Image (tube, rainbow, N blue to C red; front, top):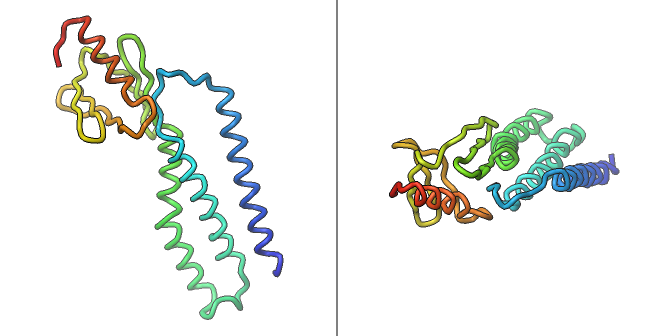
Length: 173
């Protein structure tokens, strides 16, 4: 049991290496275009590192011997459940959100893919734009389609494309 911390650290480094390899492989497979809007890479790294820390702490809770706990396994189990609810689930949701959320800008429309990989196509003629302090909101009628934060790279591509299309087709916003 004295090698348990070393095993946990080795597992964390292995998981980190696998995630990094997967990300680099995906980067070379996808021809990243300027016409794609994605969430910032910082969100991806934050969630990946957070999940690795969560896995390490979870393994620590689960693999420590019974003598390490004063009250037996029940406090460790409660701590594991609380840790999962507070950090594990939100970090996993953030990772799924970052990996799946995407806007693809095209000639006369844009394709929006949400966190659950549901894809919807919206035509620029039906879209209205509302600028806020830190984001731009896009509406179809009174229904909000998507909000694009100014923290995202290429955040203004969609707004430029919509305004350009509406200007050439004489629709005022």
